[in-house]
Length: 243
Ligand SMILES: C[S@@+](CC[C@H](N)C(=O)[O-])C[C@H]1O[C@@H](n2cnc3c(N)ncnc32)[C@H](O)[C@@H]1O
Image 1 (cartoon, protein in one colour):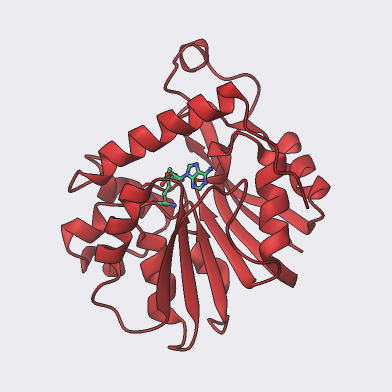
Image 2 (tube, rainbow, N blue to C red):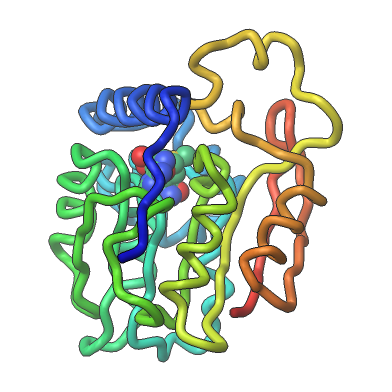
């Protein structure tokens, strides 16, 4: 039997902080005061976003819009990894055929109630909500055609484990489509000194070559980083890779 390594105390504490932060956010109508500005700047289609009620629109917490790259909308199973309140999940589920499935996975169980709310009125694919850690996903090998991840991969305390899991659940030829953050050089001292930085998605940000190398180690091919844009003290990028 494969032995699943125990997380270190640091990893366990970081995850507890992440869960606590996002559980608090899950209780708010809007996760950020400027959620609309952030969403539009990230590439969420404006007309689609503006037609959503606040309780749904307010959950945006991403740094891009990886769902745009899905293309032909004919996938059977799409996994939204670190789905947050489920805005990307909704967008994808609305567009996929009714016999497709979107699996919305998040570490923070409180957010999955928001996902249920975010998709309650749509027709399209079925949405299954799954509380789980991207570093040890409770999903079988090779089930996903596409994994999308919007501003969540950088929160993995062990990126090698997370990318290995993404590769494991993708079918051969399946695709990872992500928006995430990278840094040019060291993080500013105020972020390094902030114990909450890991939970706010900045503390775990690595440089692009390190990100690339971790995807490569996990066996991905055709790894591409594009659309670099400033995002606070770091840089947001679109990432695609093939299993
Ligand atoms: C910045 S938010 C992005 C949420 C969503 N993708 C969006 O664009 O609105 C990051 C999300 O990743 C989740 N997360 C953090 N660490 C995780 C892990 N190890 N496994 C699964 N989800 C995780 C958090 O609970 C949070 O919902």
